[in-house]
Image 1: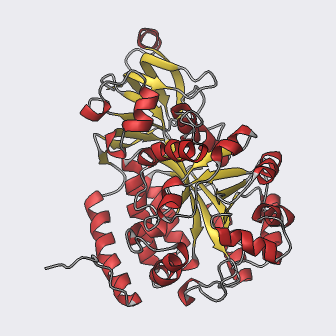
Image 2: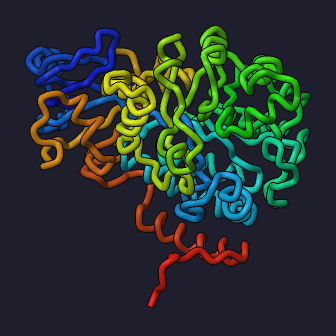
Image 3: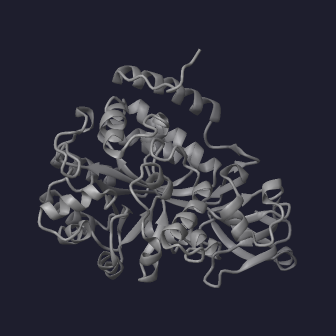
Length: 460
């Protein structure tokens, strides 16, 4: 199949942008990227997909996703993070059934596909959501995913003890063994699109001994590991209370850092922490919309990038962001970094697009497979319809996409050589069924949880 007549933002090492370009796909792979005239001579008679002069770029990679939270979008708006968790999010999630977890994962995948995300890291899939059902739904969607199975043994958050809803509490040994069981069953499933990772809770929710155990297991099995770290100032307080300078030092001491580890948020960190992260090859996922909404702070990504840290981007979850639209969030990365540093040049559009593609691939351990449009890589890419008033004119397609585009501008999505969405219609999931199921199950979950979530203004 030849995707022709496109402007291609390749994200290759030279960061070339091809005009009047073509991408040739055979099976799951990209076999040629070049100018139209050259391609037509080499591949006569191949099926052609006319891109109408629009932009092809690598599929976006979201490195911090809570699939279970898509169905409880907007449940805890305008609350501080602790109340947000304890009074709303954990209460609702603790009342999930496995069918609810699967319905929310389908809703999340649908939204991500429709806004151009092709790969993601699920950071904390709890036992109550049903790992098998979620994995099956993600395989059906066609997406590429690393599923972090939750590991925990304390119902606490930082120094706040016994605050977790009983429905969310898991036993340490059981949660580890079930992660390993899921790894044996699902890692490499979906023609290699599925990975199984450890997704331990933040310090305060996991004992040091359990962290050391999963750190050792992850290294032995070559598994990824993702954990929320230094998200709130309380994380600093906790680290100091147990004898460490910072949460980063705590994580290093207990075997959580390394090239297969992705730390989420990392707001409350300093240069000493960044150097430790860079030296160990650990990755950071920056979540600007979530951090902004919950007022937990602005992560110092400019400083991290300057010392060689690989920083990617995550949307987080439905209650903390209300959206899984990576394109919408890209501009926030630049805006907040500029605001923090008081300098509009520190994180330009090109850096943001790198964070959303090749950096995300690196964080997932897939930089040799996805993240750029190059011969030999998997055919994971998206087509953005630039024929829109808000995208006109577009003298620089990179800055136009980062600063002006929306997820709804994505027209076509290709993952692993398969057209997953064409002309805004998702081909792997039934949109009407997914949305209807999520609405129905949301009402049932809120009823079981005994919560009423409604407008704060009078409804007549």
